[in-house]
Length: 209
Image (cartoon, rainbow, N blue to C red; front, side, top):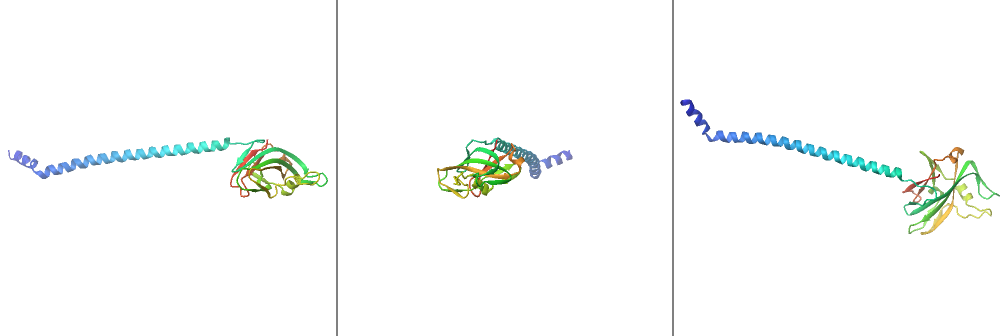
């Protein structure tokens, strides 16, 4: 009987119930915190995976677009405010008037190009606007041969592509000459690189076939 009274007296004490409530709240809070943390971590992981997948897809799409972008001969190619069109390519041993020709040290590749200035200021066009590409190799234009190739039989220069001013809305046609090895001149995987101006901030490649 004494023991029952003692037990009842303990349960009737206010501090016992306060302590019990605190313990219950602590247990409940701990469980929710873990669940919340796990849920947050899972959500952040899913977002990171989605962002990574989206970035990879965009990169793949961009690379594919670059690979698909291709220009050929007799096609107008816009680079910045300049427009280019390659009309022919011809291997040759010499260029210029027959009375005083310029002879190739190896083999000339003569590329005929039309250039149009679509900007609002004159552009100084030069043979260094053009580069011959094959795989990872780059070939520079021969300025002297290019000038000679643009002379008629009387020696008159129709267009030199040598520091020549091209006004807005105007176009010029002429020949750019490269002195290269015979196997390069005969290759079928050549490309002509054209650019916006002297500094070549924008470029495009034209397949010479």
